[in-house]
Image 1 (tube, rainbow, N blue to C red):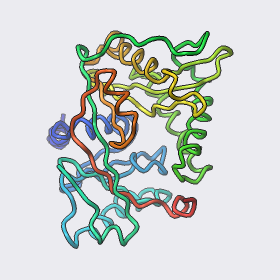
Image 2: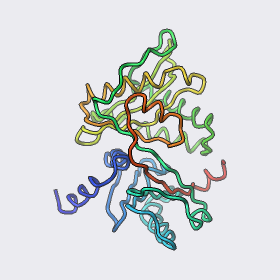
Image 3: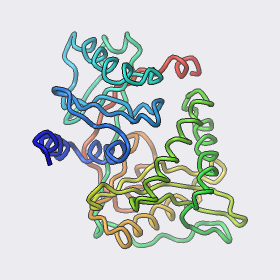
Length: 291
């Protein structure tokens, strides 16, 4: 390992669990590089993915500094991938953060994310089976990934996320292609709850870092018509067991909106809250017009 690679590895090891596990995915098939005090993260295969194409800082921007950060993003990300029209800036190691007037006036949004972790001994007993006769939990065959994209697009629209539909579908298709490649490399799998006839009702992914010791949940969704029936809890419990028993991970990580009721579900499984991560983003013009 070169001195440059060693320095990058040491820097990644200092990151909080949320960001460290986020970088599992661009480290697999994208770009993670140091640029002064920032990390540049790019996913060339999915340029519309905000949090696959961003810059990560270990502090919040100081007064008057945002313009330089935006210019750096435009050079390092947009300059290489012109179709990445958004701006995305991650903040690590920041105890609390409120969006100052300067970025708010420039159209930035600030999002907090609660990081939850679980070790094997924290996993609670198996929940009752979902309240649906004949439901089963299993992994998706590659041909089933198209059904996952359909469910993801349906949930995004139902939850009012406001993304341009065609671009969001393209983004999710590219994401599922990445997960399929990671599956082929032995780095994880995609799972679902299936009704009789193999209709997909709930889904999530679980993938590991290069060491196989950390597992990160991805994109937990339940069909809007089937929520609050125990499907998601049963699915996540089964997938957590798979992570500990089949993949041999030491720790599972999931990240959630701190105001989302799903956090209570995650805690009921044994996850414990940790640090908060902060994201500053300015949507791409096409996404802003759809809101």
